[in-house]
Image (tube, rainbow, N blue to C red; front, side, top):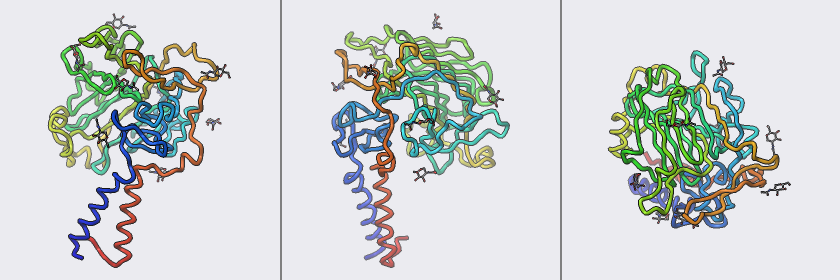
Length: 370
Ligand SMILES: *[C@@H]1O[C@H](CO)[C@@H](O)[C@H](O)[C@H]1NC(C)=O
Ligand SMILES: *[C@@H]1O[C@H](CO)[C@@H](O)[C@H](O)[C@H]1NC(C)=O
Ligand SMILES: *[C@@H]1O[C@H](CO)[C@@H](O)[C@H](O)[C@H]1NC(C)=O
Ligand SMILES: *[C@@H]1O[C@H](CO)[C@@H](O)[C@H](O)[C@H]1NC(C)=O
Ligand SMILES: *[C@@H]1O[C@H](CO)[C@@H](O)[C@H](O)[C@H]1NC(C)=O
Ligand SMILES: *[C@@H]1O[C@H](CO)[C@@H](O)[C@H](O)[C@H]1NC(C)=O
Ligand SMILES: *[C@@H]1O[C@H](CO)[C@@H](O)[C@H](O)[C@H]1NC(C)=O
Ligand SMILES: *[C@@H]1O[C@H](CO)[C@@H](O)[C@H](O)[C@H]1NC(C)=O
């Protein structure tokens, strides 16, 4: 066999693997009983697939996902990382042990010791962290400095397992403005009354500002340093046919990220929005080895916390209400994975394991590909 035939064989096998092992899940295809949980990335599996981000409506049963750990009012000062699980795949669902998990990427303490940097390298997809607990209405204060390079985006958001979302987004090199937006079940509304840009009083990449979501059952207020810059009332979001309030209403994790929008695999609209392609020869990148934003603290004040009973562990999805909007109720069920569930190989990794297998068979047979 020639090298190119072998390469073709290997890549063909590789491309077939996801079909064999990592079953996808979406609004039309739910997960099977053998891999019951639909991860936030749309793949079926067990173990960590059943934790944060697990999509209840696309899973085998709406109860396949672990409950959403209930809200506890708290403030994290990111100079102290003792309650941040740096390796998200080690997290077992114990939201008392950890307040945050690093889903992807790397955190680096700031040189001056006033917080932590979320980093973006050419070799990765940036960094994303998530709270382990969920907020079902409440107030969230982020104290942060944005990134400041073309193509690089900083985001501070709430995200539910059914893709209700509220955003602060800092695209590209613009450091005197921030965008606000929200999604209802994964659908954004970019009309004039929704996606909006707000001024910041001083450079957002070199000064800490406080960005607040005040997310309540009837309204959302976005504030910068205590000044309300945008309000959306639930009543503003009634669909044209009057059938649904397109308003975020499901328990959400808090997520912070830095991500590369200005790369060739992005859609042109995304690249333009983020200020163009990333310049990996930028002196800041070259001297640090990464781009970054800086997180100082996140304060969470839960709504209705006083109404939770001692034994309440979380929220669990109960299906849709009569308007087709997913609803949750409190539960006492465990949010934890067992040891064996935690160590089960995530289905997504089978593809990598299998590729390594194919390559080592080739190597063992004395065949080199490249
Ligand atoms: C759902 O997933 C199936 C199987 O992976 C795919 O064929 C289908 O196009 C997907 N549907 C949607 C709406 O994404
Ligand atoms: C965070 O902790 C550091 C070190 O203890 C302290 O100097 C700083 O004031 C704290 N920051 C906030 C916002 O509480
Ligand atoms: C994270 O934990 C998993 C499972 O314990 C391990 O396989 C992996 O190497 C760890 N990753 C890092 C970056 O330490
Ligand atoms: C969860 O973590 C807390 C704090 O580390 C610990 O006290 C508790 O025993 C853990 N719970 C379980 C069920 O492992
Ligand atoms: C977006 O919002 C406008 C005004 O509230 C509404 O008329 C329109 O139907 C919405 N579009 C979508 C896709 O929800
Ligand atoms: C939310 O914003 C609106 C409009 O600026 C303001 O009237 C209202 O008082 C704000 N609510 C709270 C609780 O701050
Ligand atoms: C729940 O409602 C959504 C629309 O909001 C719909 O797509 C979905 O099929 C519904 N699911 C069930 C189980 O009724
Ligand atoms: C939770 O546990 C308490 C006490 O064991 C019980 O009274 C209550 O009904 C349970 N609630 C739910 C939602 O299961």
